[in-house]
Image (tube, rainbow, N blue to C red):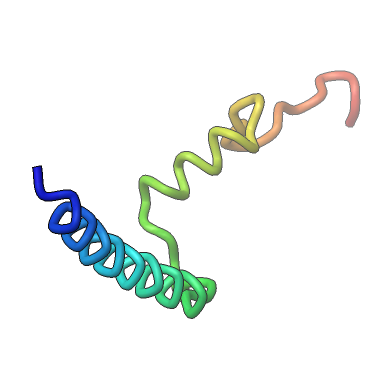
Length: 67
């Protein structure tokens, strides 16, 4: 068992992983709010969370007592 060789390989892997993490952190840092309309499926999910009762459509009922 070559302990020095194993340590050398692990250090090389750690450097690769560290550079990948740094790249992902830079990408995440520069991402701002997206512009434009969200996709239909995303807006449907938001509407389901916000809306408790479905919205009524059409004309309101006429009150028979009022003239």
